[in-house]
Image 1 (cartoon, rainbow, N blue to C red):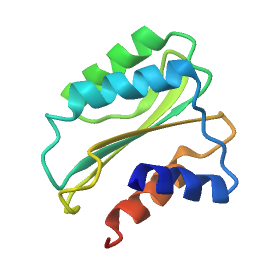
Image 2: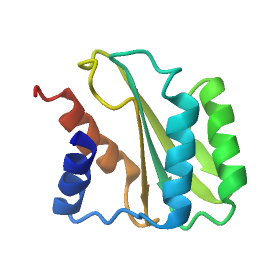
Image 3: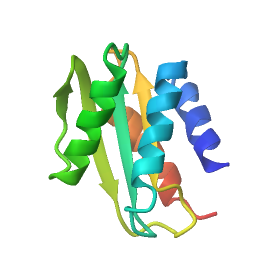
Length: 121
């Protein structure tokens, strides 16, 4: 699965991602809410800093941003980055969330994910 490959590449870059139950719940909620709204050949990539102290409010705020102009910034004490990709093969994942510690530059995670999503096969 391509998502696992991306996680492995991020880990190989010595970046630790978070996979606790709060992260998994927010990731699942985002995918459920956005999967049908993102057209084939496009993807929304998110990075969010941990710890997520207000998961419900953070998730709701992320969904509100998506309905707006795809802005990033601080959200309930967490830094959020959003990258919209176009021109991808249609079988690529449409929504990916990466949660990392505050000492990590979220753009480096997005760069790794984008590079893999744009690779053939």
